[in-house]
Amino acid sequence: MIRSISVFSLAAAVTVFALAPGLAHGYRRSQAAFTCAPYNSDDQWGSYAISNNALSGTKVYACGVDSDSQHHPNNVVSTQPIAIRGSAYMAEGIYAQACVSYSSIVGGACGGVTANLTVGSLTLFPSASAWTSASSSDIPHLIVALAGCRSNGTGSCLAWNLVRGYHVDYN
Amino acid sequence: MATPKSSIIVPALAGVVAGIASSIIFSATAGKPPAVVAPAHAGSAAQSPTVYAPVFVSPPASAEHVEELRTRVRELEAHARATGNGPAPPQDPVAFEEQKLATIQRHEALVKAHREQPVDPAWGPATSTLVRQDLETLAGSSSFKVVEAECKTTSCAGTLEWPNFGAAASEWRKVLHAGFQANCSREVTLPDPADETAPYRATIVLDCDSWRAEGH
Image (cartoon, rainbow over all chains, first blue to last red; front, top):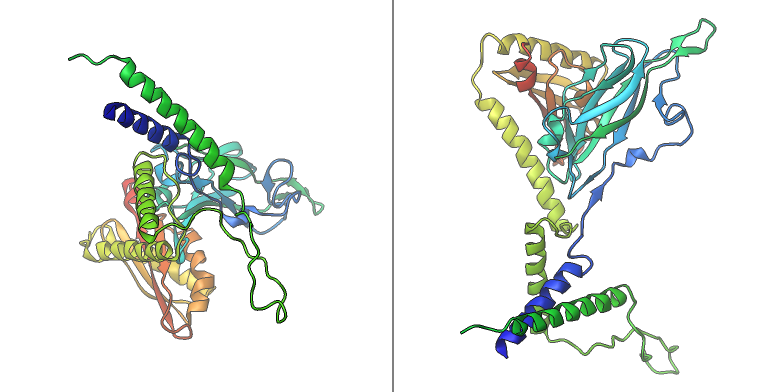
């Protein structure tokens, strides 16, 4: 009898534990606030890319990176975990950095700056060192700088540097 | 003596069924507001209108019982976290302060490791010159001045001074995102100041391990 009650209780406890909401599948996801950018402006997001449509002057963008207790970028693959897809009309038209900002204090960390050496469609692989040494409470993001567009000679743009998106590969 | 299999399977199945039923009941009631079953009067009817306050249906629990439940919940959460399926850590002020302290300590550990690193005469002084040049260039378009910039064997540190904390808080990102000739990882932390109007110093630490490994 005692054995039966013990088995019953154990099975009931295990089942409740496995199914109860809030215990089995709780997780936190952090998202940097600067992804709340204006929509449908080519400076921010147009033609399924961000591009610098100014004839002169580099523009800097901050791009949010999802992070939660299951997938924080401090646990990314060791080889080229970040891939930024874009297109450039000039060498060093796109710069990128992977950074974290601290959630509880002013400050942050960034990896070294990576720039494109080729033109046309390309992939940039910025260093993830600031991510891999981050704590799970740090907020990851990418910094992307786009040089100004090439003029067509009449005050308009002929070619752009642009970024379509980015992939992060987790372990 | 052999035990019949049914003596284990039957209660186990019953336990599973009971567990599922408990979970369903728990899910259905978890989000509901407490029931209001009786009005509570505040003062006499002549002095103030009747105030309806929520009264919980559940019988009052003893303090010991509540504490026992809290302990059990903590145990379950700890077990769930240990197995990778746990709930997120609580967002309470204590946890926030612990994160802040951990971030400051991590930065201080980086500074300490740099200070204790020996100087590689073939790399340190030359890289120090590059870092100082870049910081001075940044300082030219910022409100900080470069107090110190020194590289050792694989790391560098630059101490910068702003006229006040507000200036530091608005300009520290320029230092993180600058294109340094020594293209190293960089980190900076700005702890809360004792006096927000006083000159404020912060140390940026450059980890040049990878950059140096590339042959620089």
